[in-house]
Length: 106
Image (cartoon, rainbow, N blue to C red; front, side, top):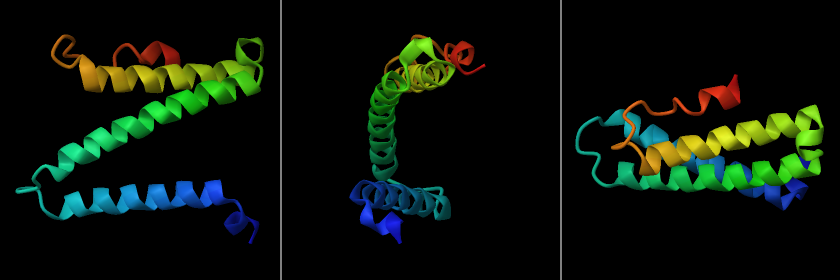
């Protein structure tokens, strides 16, 4: 039961289950979803930005670009950040979304 002792893990689990339930609620009705789906997209983007920031912090803790693990975490964080920037700010400028993140993932 050490999982229940860590409050940060409990918080992350509650957030994950909340997003999962919210996403499942969209799957039942394809029409008349209202503004809830836009709120979901916005909240998901904010979580992605927070994840990219924590990814950079974790990459620094694992040695940054000096170690293989630090480099891997940093490149995944860069890809996550670029995907969020693509989906939030550049869809009208660049129609081919997520194309710039491929070099960071592969």
